[in-house]
Amino acid sequence: MKHLLSLEKLPRADFETILRDAKTFKQTRGAHKTQPLAGQTWALIFSKSSTRTRVSFETGIRELGGQVMFLSANDIQLGRGEPIEDTARVLGRMIHGAVIRTFAQSDVETFAAFSKIPTINALTDDEHPCQVLTDIFTFEELRGSIAGKVVTFIGDGACNMPVSWIFAAAKLGFELRIAAPKEFQPSADILKRAGGKIIVTEDLNAAAVGADMLYTDVWVSMGKEAEAAERIKIFNGYQINAPLVKLAKPGALVMHCLPAYRGKEIDAETFEAHADTIFTQAENRLHTQKAVLNWAVS
Image (cartoon, rainbow, N blue to C red; front, side, top):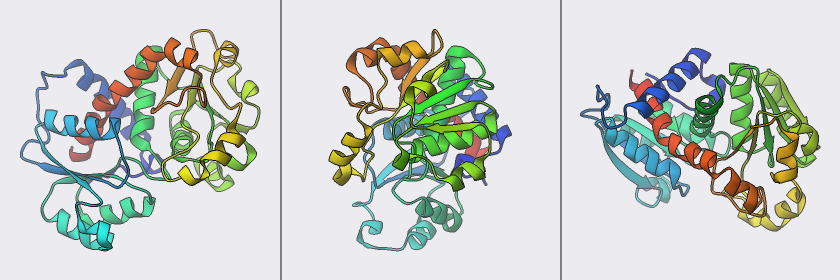
């Protein structure tokens, strides 16, 4: 049985399988030769709001032959304090797999352990593995192998996105630069656990020089809304804009996992100039989720 809980725990061979299959699923959409989820029912258990993650997984499960049910925290007893272990043991006797988007990484790991069904982390406060798999697939679709390339992440370097990027860089052999204010840089423990070539700096201009990709995310992640005013003040200047893009390699990709707040982490002009890449990235959530689902049951 396979779970996608963290990129730290995903073997390189499985990275490569998912990325290869995402390409195939994109090319053969509407004409898949197999239906690996036929006869299966999967649950989407979401404690956090979602657009791209929910739509891509619901569509993907159906296109792979499965049935899907969406369960918010308010729909089930988790929302009234039932232990995750008990919910997992109940659902594990009724459904065939679960996609979970929640706050605590421990909840996803506990669910996987007690449900004994394939479990996919669709975002926690610690990691966002499906998004980074999609981003790497998109980069390789547009620019070839990511091995040996330079990816620069700008913004909150301690949130789930850069953490998943850190583990991916170590596994796939590309350089990751993280430009973030000192108090929003990844922990020394994560950097030590990952290994690889990771450069952390407060100097976003230095981090952008010669990069093959510039990447950003919102300054205020879900659950951090109470900190919004302070975060906006601290992150002021950590923005992808035209002068920063000029420092990167000619033809460098600009990517954003969305939603985007123009005028904050990216300016409107730069967003629109790279909108085709950004919305290809969003579309690719579907194809990569299908590859993840296929991998989980294969």
